[in-house]
Amino acid sequence: MSKLYLFSMGFPYPGKSMETYLETECQYYGKFEEVNICALEVLKADLDKKRDICCGTKTNVYPILFGSKVKYLFYSILSVLDKNFYVECRKLIREKKFDLGKIRRLVKFFGRSHCDANQVIQTLHLNKSEKVKNAVIYTYRFEYQAYVCSLLSRYFDNPVLIARAHGYDLYEERNSNQYIPCREQLLKSFDRIYLIAKDGIKYLTEKYPQYSKKYFLSYLGTQDKGIEEYESDDTFRIVSCSNILPGKRVDRIIEVLSELTSPNIEWIHFGDGPSEGDIKELAKNKLQGKIKYQFMGRRSNTDILEYYKNNSISLFINLSESEGLPVSIMEAMSFGIPCVATDVGGTGEIVIDGYNGWLVNTEDACQKIANIIDNFCSSVAQVTHFRTNARNTWEKYFNADTNYNRFVQEIIETAEQENT
Image (cartoon, rainbow, N blue to C red):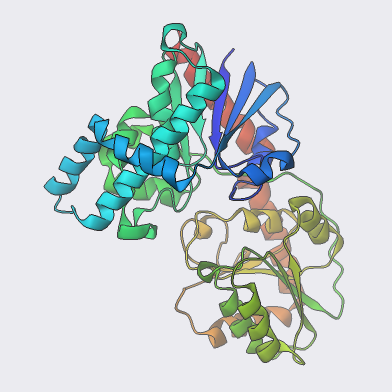
């Protein structure tokens, strides 16, 4: 049996972690002999806040602490000893992309990678003379974390290297200087890259066609929490769920809601963030006295799903500027909730325009989106029809039982082929 070495961005600790959905995936790891989770960038203050997780097999969690600026600076200076640093520099020069911003990013990338890799070596007591056998090295993010895995692979005997790629860790244009270091080097060294949307496969295939045989589609998924019969009341309840950040455009949602003419609208938002104060002030100015609204703050995933199950929700709304393929929409559709969303990233793979919701352009006028919602409000038959279609979409493509069991089985079969 294979041993899994999973590299996360903090999970199962809080703080900087953006991987709450890994908690679901982990429940399907029972076919591995052992699971070792290396949680990168964990804050000291969060060490006593580790969430309980169930992987169905022996599980070890190793927190890799977020380093000080001095420590990262030290390793950044040492990065000039890494031959891949010069390989990447030559590539930038050859492609006429060499500039100060990219070099700063590159130095930081190598510094952080070597710093974290060194911590992992010490924490797991890795030794080149006693290489770990039958191992799968899996990074949940395909940015510097992937290079950490590449550095560590020399301590393993013929490991299988796999990665998931989502949004910012996939689309180079979403990063500062529109650059992710060592992209081609990592694509060459990894065995499989799992994309969470067809849009991701298309993107990598267009940019790096020479590695297309390594690209695989693996949708994320959510678990079936059951679905209650929709009971229409006098309130048309709209829900959104996201961090309150500029790119999530919660302000745009408020502008759209302010244009609605239908009566008895209620808006519920789950999530918080640095822009929360400004958003609440905007909601007060635009919605107060017109639409009932409530900011629920940051809630556990369990609490959010319980709310979806126990309340009559008519519509989910997501007007983000960019996305991978939103798990928040999967969760909503598992309860039969239709969605209106911007057509960005892989969103169009779950929101099918005119079937289980509506796709809108990021530049569409607020009035246009409001008209879509007003028309939907006025048709009970359409609400019922779209709810059925939303649930069917989830069952066919985004059921965690189907997707994660298949994903784990593929990894295990790949590992077995490598070690025979």
